[in-house]
Image (cartoon, rainbow, N blue to C red; front, side, top):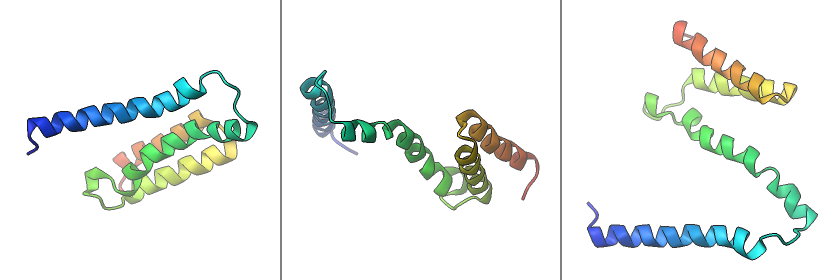
Length: 108
């Protein structure tokens, strides 16, 4: 159990850190022009966030106690394959969801 003073210290330090990170981009850079190479890399940030959020849920799902689940791996693989080939996010998500729903009714 963490004591109250230590908890508030952690909250304040995390708040300052979060403010500092945002201020570095919004306050210091602001509306200044950025180099094209940086803009090219920042364009992929949004694309990288979703896999980073989903990957632990696929590889170490809490529902199985952290063991890999073949159904989740198959759904992720099909989602990736459909997304890569079709370049359509909605179609890729529907393909993965179809595998998960089908797996709920039929065991592999």
